[in-house]
Image 1: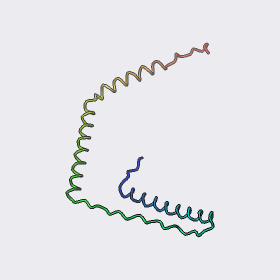
Image 2: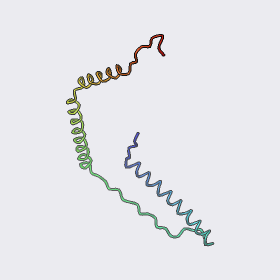
Image 3: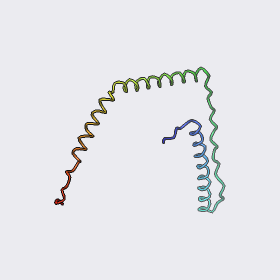
Image 4: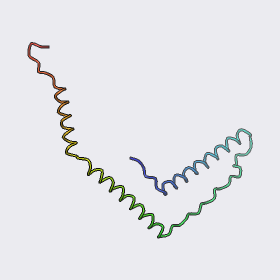
Length: 116
């Protein structure tokens, strides 16, 4: 089942990866210090600037909501129209005939007691 990626999940993943990156940078600094015999302190690594979150107005949210509802309504209307054009009974009859033909082809003749 696919996971739906919401903005909250993506933000959490970014934070997790940044923490892993800091951990890896620390380990690399320790290894470099051990290699050169110097101190194991990190070089001055700039902290990433916090990104300001933009705020959306209620009118903007409403416009996005209406557009999404309109797209889904068109999608469901097209899907319903395609389902109505497919004759289900005729398709079942064809499938039934094919199934019966396969059964006849697969049946083996009955063996008499003298046959092997």
